[in-house]
Amino acid sequence: MGFKALCLGIFCVIFISHIYTPLPVNIEETWKVMALDTIVKTCTFMATCFENIGIMQYEEFISMIFHLDYTQPQSDEYVTVMDTEFLDIPVRLYLPKRKSETARRAVIYVHGGAFCFGSFRQTAFDFLNRWTAKKLDAVVVAVDYRLAPQHHFPAQFEDVLTVVKFFLQPKILSKYRVDPTRICISGDSSGGALAAAVTQQVQNDPGIKHKIKMQALLYPALQAIESYLPSHRENEHGIILTRETAIKLISLYFTKDEALPKAIRRNQYMPLESKHLFKFVNWSILLPEKYRKDHIYTEPILGQASFSLPALMDSRASPLLAKDSQLQKLPLTYLLTCQHDLIRDDGLMYVSRLRNVGVQVAHDHIENGIHGALSYMTSPFYLHLGLKIRDKYISWLDKNL
Ligand SMILES: *[C@@H]1O[C@H](CO)[C@@H](O)[C@H](O)[C@H]1NC(C)=O
Image (tube, rainbow, N blue to C red; front, side):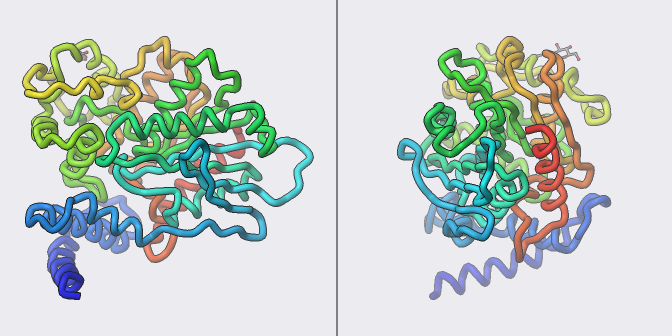
């Protein structure tokens, strides 16, 4: 009881002090966005305080808050919803009820949450996946994966890959009456990173018979080797996702060693051997001029870090680091970026790289978009922006899948 009162007290004080932060002028539903941003920043601040005082770990506190929003699988008149496992990995299936003469399309959805948080159980993802199944008359497989920091990279990637490979087996596809030529992998934010990495793996693996027809990446995180892109500079204290939070969480994906976030803050954390990878995140070439603005490009400073983390150079963690020859095999891609998003430039650079090797990309850029908008589609945190992004994504899928 005392603890709860303390939380509430701290929350109120911080909430009031945050709420007057100015927002970019084109943001719609200003008060709602301000309130949301303030809640997120207040929770982050409280989590940091609790960690510093020693009450609990930062990520334990945030994940408690996420858990408040979890739902049970609930069927409705259009879709049968059930939680099950594919090779011990939790999945939530959405199976349309309507009788169908032909095999159905399918979407595999990978949720975001900075590799540390979240689940398909969250109200917003449950809502999105149910909506997808109903609107497209498609089978939807929502996958949960092990989370950091209990499990570091590549556990997350491996879990998603396991589920995708399991689902792509001819006997499983026919069990759910899925058309093997009409399957999409989608994901948002860190889920976009996992979707992109798994798609690269599946398309380049000669052992997998059925390939993916398309990937849909929604404000995806696609690299972890450069922490001072123009979008990082412009959104350092950005809405929902700040540079400090992103650095804290991306570090936990790889290690608990405090040396990593410190080095990432300075953007001096990559080893000398990573030099050849920086052409893949060279924003002075890969970003359209509109987004480069008058930011000054500087060469990376390498070899300063005291630790060795080969995972940082792995394209399964940073899909932007894949070679052209791997990218060439990628399917039709839908990529959505938001202007006021710290990790906007990851998506923009991936669009350039994919187009450079001849992959077809449909790119939607949301000028008044903010990171994580799809997580705000259900009450009480309901943004038109979330619904707008949902509708763009779903109508593209409907036309192309
Ligand atoms: C990035 O591109 C610029 C040209 O805009 C070039 O001078 C620089 O050497 C490149 N750096 C890397 C690491 O690719």
